Length: 296
Image (cartoon, rainbow, N blue to C red; front, side, top):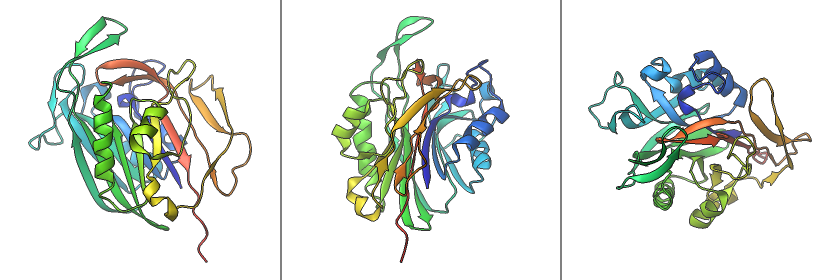
């Protein structure tokens, strides 16, 4: 089973700044994930050609189960407001999504409020700005896999230090209301050390994802709740190698050897990613493969 998290940057191409459905579809298909968490997802947005990026990703993976969860109505960086129930599918929306090749028993959406004050953010064009933080959400699903129930959630946390820790703790509490084992996928906007310290959850994928020119720290994570670890097979991690593809300008991290029976492979891809209204040089995906024990 391959689990992955991918910050879509609303589908914008790294080469020319435009959004092309075929490019998004090819990038998602290349991940070949059984369960995929997506961040910075557009729906009905003029800037992304009014595409439904969630449905496009599901089609690329041949995944029958998918759901989009809006965090805001409007366009980040322009005019927006927190999502509200009166916003129908025709309104421009922006949020996160979860795509699964496995049936979903039930969905759960948890609101993660944005920071209450404006925060300083360094932008490449206008320098230091005081920006309003967006609300965030956690989207989780209880999946019916061939090996039993699996709870998977995805989120995109605030860029405001400290406030993202509060959101992460809230997300962990919400996930623990779901059946074990549990996995959290997403762009957490904080390095691996604080993530492990504040959650106690085990990282399944370890690969630097920031900055893309030469990744030095990991902001995108795949985490497993240790309270459910007895239901998994054990896991190990192959020694990664990183190379740059001149045609796609992406970073890849994987194993130099064939995966063993308990292998977890990590993989990353690179580019410019907008985190809220800030812009950071990012490698916006990480993935892991989990192998369950054979049933006797």
